[in-house]
Image (cartoon, rainbow, N blue to C red; front, top):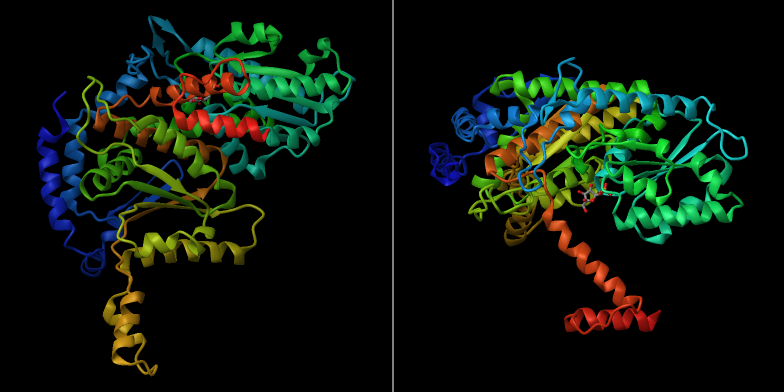
Length: 546
Ligand code: F6P
């Protein structure tokens, strides 16, 4: 593939960036009354207003051209068609098959994967029903009232945020908890609130080799037995989700209690697979199907919508514009909805584990920026904290504001205030406040000329800070599914443009290997002679203190 810097669109964008940097959005809004409607589009229950961005029609045209030159459509289709696009692991990438309601087959290596997908969904449905109805009895004949879901990374974040975001849909009779970290405080705190007779443990690990998940499950199992249960009772209280069914059964999981997933489902793309079992347990199978349906509709949208109305494409290209041409290194996500508070952490893994790479598919080192730092938290909390930096520092930090229009069980006054804060922030970021305006405000306050000028400078808000606003009709299961798929496709498109493999994660491996060596040294199974002086000294201090 042609080097990105050699494409025509890249050069045009570089030239346009120089022009745009000298302009102000405030003036664009003042002179173009149609700007907001021109740069607003809607699909799958999500309206995107991207008018408060540092873009002109010329910039958008050049960005669309870049997408064409980088063959984005072809690469999107290659994923949907089951091509081996995860080339470093020789795998297809087919989370879209898990929500394929088209009735059409999806072929991998000449085999249709859909019968397997549907069989797993049926198994999840039956199991969810048996738990929710109380039909499934624990070892002493009691119904299950709590599910403790153990997993980390993609085997945790997706189920956690979806369950949290759909709180109004949760089944009150079943309390679903998550444990990820190997930090023993967490599992101990959760177990302290469990009654072993009424608790189900769902262990989720695609590889079935992740240290944190294995250890937390062993701890849960030991606790379960200590409470008075027997080995034979384990089958009634422990289930697993994994693509490594053999390892799961060797670990002691009853074969019929293992929910399979395929190796073509990447961890951070897996909430649609059996990894979504905790979601089913929390909100019911029918609602889980709606999550899948929403994602399916976004899948259709990304493949068929024209560039000008294609939500994932627009979000992806805006990200490329800021990252590669306007100097941005990070991107902030600001959900103005308490139940979506986990979404920034979810997108952190999705985006940073996918596009935090600096090698092209051909093994060349990139000479341009790739995945940005993703960060953020729920509004309005950030307004009383890090928004200061977004407003007045000299960093370029594009923001995605998110807000549901309708909310259930919500007081109108609170929601109006939440919305006004959200919109007010985007407005302040865009228009800012000039030195002259600030100077004017301070007139008549008895300040000396020097103080007057100095204070006005401190109060000046540069504005011209970019943001998208995503308005949801409501955060129902379907819209949430569409939202998650929207960000998945954004990441896919950006990876396609940057020519990186968005589906491997080699960067996390070395730390795991070294961590295991360190554990051996801490536990006295290995000497520290091969360790660097700093690590050896840290271990000595740790062991000494212990
Ligand atoms: O360490 C990174 C990672 O492999 C993620 O990609 C993955 O989601 C997570 O660990 C958990 O992996 P597993 O589901 O195999 O336990």
